Image 1 (tube, helix red, strand yellow):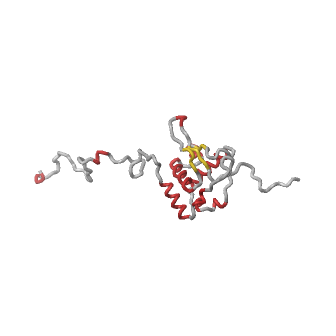
Image 2 (cartoon, rainbow, N blue to C red):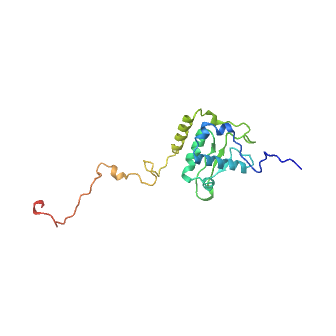
Image 3 (tube, rainbow, N blue to C red):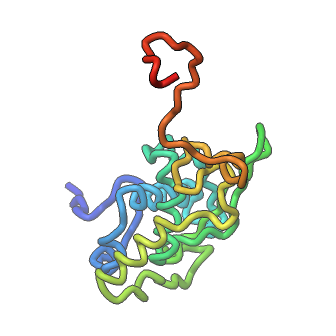
Length: 190
């Protein structure tokens, strides 16, 4: 009877250093950031541990994995700021089949394409710094600006009308009745 190894893994796996999982940077990651990181690690596994730095993951892949569409970009920025992910090529939306996905590099993975991992997450010294960096990255807006958003950040409300900004118009707090009917008015007000 052959002895069975107790430490055998029966499939693909993703190894993460305990030191990394105990780090302040890893402990402050949002749930969306964890999911984005996991999905990019799955993509690396699907590439056989190769092509780190050229891992294409689309927004649709993230959505299929369970990440809300509006949480993807803040999570990617958070992972970059904390040193867990690098976007090597920014994708771009387009009509039909001409879309280009983001390409990712996982800087802490030791594989054929990145034999010397950088472990950028180690530069975050404590929880307070990690929380500050993560919060700032999540709140950061895209560099191109969103022309379709109102100035207060509410994307569902239109910006103020340019007519209201002219010198010849004023905003009125209450409406004045302009009825010409004299029903119910006294002789004194006529």
